[in-house]
Length: 173
Image (cartoon, rainbow, N blue to C red; front, side, top):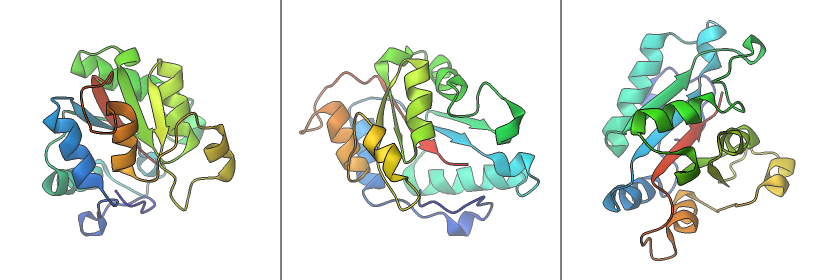
């Protein structure tokens, strides 16, 4: 989804370019797709759980139902083991899906997404957006121009069978 800081308004949810195609391509291969997302707006009092759920529902209206959602409502100073860049969200998603982290990929737009993937033992692909720092791009092992490009990196140029058994998209805050 397009980055809207602390979004609690479902009407502001807008898919990133190629998101529909990317998610459809992964699902067509029978690969589970999930979302792992920091939502520190809850800890900061900027969002309610109800708003987070409403945004989730809108995402699923636009892109279809996801196999798993793993959300961390804690703030950066809470030292939560699930908050990215810690591996907890990725590991929780893998556990719920019944897949090993080493068979999982995380597609994200910031370094914390890739750090969480690495810490969990998963692969990561960075899809830079205007909020992505140059240093995060330089440090990434895999970078794609858009979500479909990231899926191609993971599943092959023709989106054929590849090593990923689950794909999670990282959210920001």
